[in-house]
Image 1 (tube, rainbow, N blue to C red):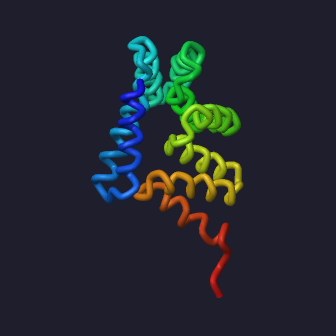
Image 2: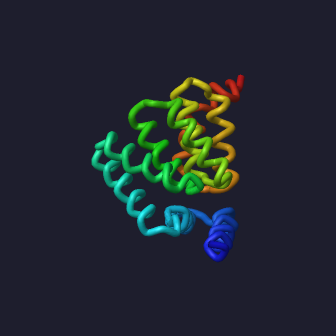
Image 3: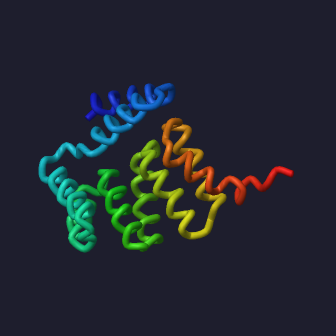
Length: 162
């Protein structure tokens, strides 16, 4: 796993200066690395959970991803993926708990940080959302979704210019 961690570190460094499509490509490579648990069985649970999420079968997605987090509690991607299911179910506090666990395991998980921002927006905590989004941009400066989310919060967080 040390080689994979070194590769992710190098990719995160490259992401700092990458632009446009290159940044998206590097972010995709990072996500691919993060989705590898080191166990074929755990990778299968992640894949099945994500497939169920895509099919909007949230109960099945939670079932697969809970099995994953039970059997591989140190695998951050399991927590981040289950958080997305909870978010889609509008279970924001459950999502936040899983995002916190994912970030405890992988503090550079820009997807989990983005999730925290999205949850904070839903909970009407714009300053906390803004801070989470700033942390995403510190890791992934070209994240257009986060930039758009911050634009929608700008007046509320920073106030109006006179």
